[in-house]
Length: 102
Image (cartoon, rainbow, N blue to C red; front, side, top):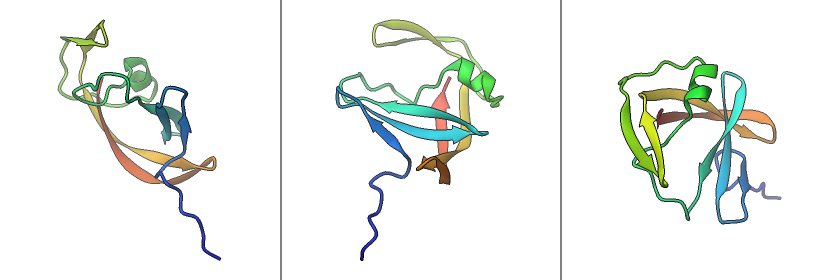
């Protein structure tokens, strides 16, 4: 009997608007990465500063540049680059590299 392979590297949840949240974990804390076809595509992956601070991740390329996304005024504070764990069926299932703008 053939074993079904998962279609994604990590666990994901489908939303009602065609969006999808992929679940990963960093330092034992799970969080989701949202992909949404109806949202404008940002120039890079965005991550919240409060999550970066809670995970004690090191920021590089420190700055305080103005940035507009989806009609909101934001600030770019820096960049992070780290390894996160993929999550399948509630257990760690490999790693992937995660780079984002804070």
